[in-house]
Image (cartoon, rainbow, N blue to C red):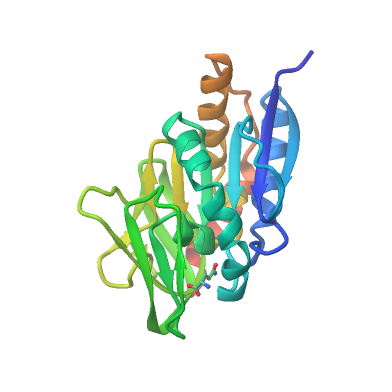
Length: 238
Ligand code: GLN
């Protein structure tokens, strides 16, 4: 019997743009290559949150999508904060990254409360920050594509996920990109992020496997194509 990793997507109907769905496909495939079976859990507003999920993914969305999911997210905020503190690996992109902070205030001055997993807050700026982005993180170089109005400010003790090498990142000014707390990664990078950055995908699988089974023996995966995609992405114009 293969060991099972349960992968949950938060709000894939409302929060899923610029290819974010590819993060799920990448995790499913790589978990399989590492010898696991996977179970997919789709969390939609109004459903009971499955707190047995081993990895949680969340994508980006329009301001209106963020508004649609906010009540359900707030309802489940305490449970998600508890899972985060217990070490459940999570990857939240752009719109949900913003709502894993304290709040997002849109261009129209609309205030959308977040769940405060990250000590961070976001306010829409005067221009959208759009284009290919390259960052440097503890997991090496991470590449992707950003498109956001929100400028995210990190609290004094909040660690960023990475530093911007080329592109805008959290504010377009402070050189930081994303946030990390426990095993929760927040990032502005779409693209999607995981296929071109297999090390981050494997880190999520590694963290989930250690938490659930106490061990992880990675398989040898031929990443020639993924790494080529990574390299091509770094050379694309902004
Ligand atoms: N609506 C948010 C913003 O514009 C998030 C965008 C996104 O998820 N790409 O900042």
